[in-house]
Length: 134
Image (cartoon, rainbow, N blue to C red; front, top):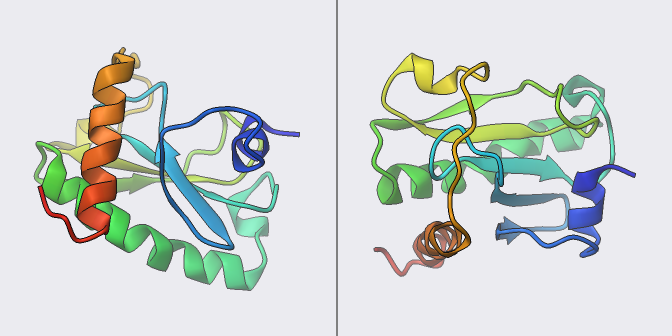
């Protein structure tokens, strides 16, 4: 069982942003930048292109409002997307606030964000998604 499955099952805490019957989105606790989020399918599949068609085709649509919320609430020019899939054997995509292409460089060191700030970022994203713009 992957760490993401444990988060989906409520066995591990997360900074959950939103979920539906197929996906969950939460902040990455080892982010490259503040506001770095993960979109994870609720079925445990190692590689993203091994997902069933209905998941693969719905993943970007699920991510779209989250990406827009990131662009509106984080200090960035846009929301970047990346699929690396080497850290956790559970398909997922990264949504990151970016100002340069280098902000998507996964060889850079991760940053430390305190719990209070993670919760503040999560709340801003959730509020934006609920229509309570920040």
